[in-house]
Image (cartoon, rainbow, N blue to C red):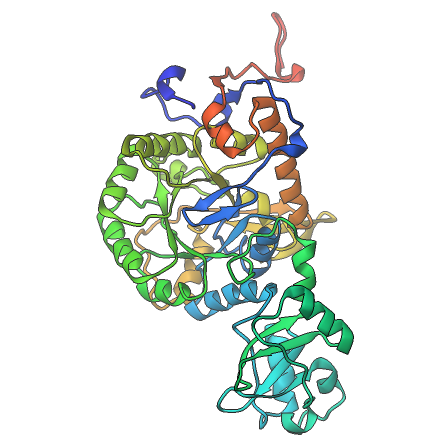
Length: 480
């Protein structure tokens, strides 16, 4: 276990990733055998310690789906209306599951044109047709819509003889049934023929494709969502759909923030991760006033597009914040996952964060340039770039005021900037590279899993010239 007093930095200075290095240690397994299983919150386990940041140029449904399929989790940003954020969460939950419970349906008196519009809006290829008592009457698919006039009623275009299943059906049996009848959708009904769910061939087949996917008890992908501590309405509405809520405030150690968060925790059933925090005192004080905290998000001012430290000359570098949070938890004798948030550039930064006590890392910069980010793309000099902006930037603040009638800006100055990042392609490749790099770092450090890296890693301070490139070094009598 890393102890700051053993490193001679207990109270001397606020440090970050470049100030330390992991020392190599003996290990008897290969990097490919190392486990990256960890905790995002007290009740949510991840297969890789990667979280996409709740920024409006980083995480919406597409990014969250990709993270969950690859073993991590995405946090949907809150720079939108409550309804829009809920719809993003629902998209993740509908992306793949065994039995879809939140089924999009249509009534028989609607038109085929309305059915087509609904399919397009929700990105689906079929709708169960139900009556006012939710009894299944038929199903209308994209094929039915394509070959029917938009003006006719759904009841005249739908397929009426529908193959159905009950809730006890297994994934294997459902695939056999769909193959037998050459259908892609299998409605699930109760004894009274009321629709209770829907199974799709795509969802069942994807369960086998993504072996490391993080799913809830219903087989749906896990997803989290960001909230303001002061937006109780948003928190309550989101809690019906998300696996976790993440408070999204730059300085959590604030009496009004803590009091408001207490109301949220008391009124929701899902995990609540609090932050951002940057000091031991902040963690101790917050935990003394809040019960059922499911995770700590730490680090203030270290993000690549965050200008808090430059403007205010205050902050808490991410690695230092992790160490402070770990000391607080050790003092209290409790185990709550710590999320390192801000300024992480590579797998090595993640490894050193875990060595200091983090359970996982939250990243914006590393995912903002990916295909799945909602950021706009442009061509500069023949190369593709994607926009990345801090949530404290002028444009992000303006959008928040425009879309959220409850939004209030507590500060009169912007604390974020914008940047155009080179396009990176699919996020899956970035996640796989980070996982491979982290396993390599853990192999050097002699750790078989995340817990061993947290408890057994050997860390040393490193001089600024220890690993300088030859081209950076000057010998006596030389000048650049």
